[in-house]
Length: 524
Image (cartoon, helix red, strand yellow):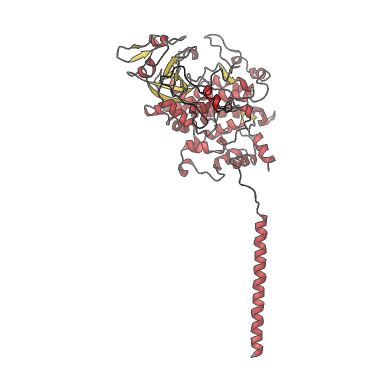
């Protein structure tokens, strides 16, 4: 009996020993696993985008077909969402195509760092209380203007827009200031309206109570009306809806080089005639035979009773573009386009007769170094998509020298014809065979059904106040955007085919993403 009890006790002790050893081994294993886990700090915003780009092969592709391996970045970008996870189609995810587009990694590539010297304007340092009275901005004429002293917290949207202009762009990709700026342009009371001097057609400068200003271009044509085929490009009207659509297209392409523009219905009596201090403009108002209030102003060509702008009877559709900082604060340099048209009915420009014209341009400053040539090609693509033949000059901010973006101003002659494409606009791309990688990838993205250019443009324009009156671009114009986009991509494809064995894609694609890739790779 005693022997059996002793044997039973020994069995229990051995069992407990084995359990103890097992628990110790399990604890050691868990501790070792925990020790192997990295203790890195949370990744900063945008890191997932940079790493996704850094791990991707940048071998480029010609044409519109999808080939495994050569479309790595495009395929990756279509699958990676804002937070580095699989992104379903816009319909499946509950987002619109426009929201999905702006959430795409190609539209969230971090901009280059902005140093103190890379801001266009600087705010003066704070002054002492005793000196503050002399720092208050007071209008000479207080009638209708807001009496306020601005600080960083209560700056009006137009001022924040000016202060956020940098060497690289007019505004940031997701700038929260753009929507309130557009809202104020569309709704704020007008306290002054004067004609802008210069130019061939009627333009007004409108001033608001918070001292903000906007450039007004009036409605001249119906939405579905095409430019007369017998007119030369320099005889075309400027269209208010073209200015609005150009701003939206520029943003969809990822450029952000057109100042914000919004549509508005103005009362030509209460918001122009009654508030103008321009006597010459005031003298041009009259009432038409059917009772509409009209005016025509003073300008080089289309300012006469035959080309008058008329309300219905006083309501007039216009575009309002926020003004850039005054030239006394931020001077701009005007550049003659190398592919400027002759503006003659009989004479051709040199680029129209010399297929090797770009070779000379590439050797000429500022196109011989830096990004100026691909900056210009960006503008060419914009102009071709909206059929703007009137790009004879462009501007840059003087402060930034040659290392800065181009301003895409004055787009009123765009979107004149939807039934005909103008191949001559695309000649710089055909002759130079050079394009930014980021631009090329975005264009390819916009050719996909998931982000189709015509669809995102339709959606973007639907947010404009004038869309409640009628669509800002007719369906034929939207269809023309898709057709022209395919033409641009086919042109790049032909360039790549010609460069096969010569220098490859490096001669066609300017890799503006490579610097970001290198930065992330070096950072581990």
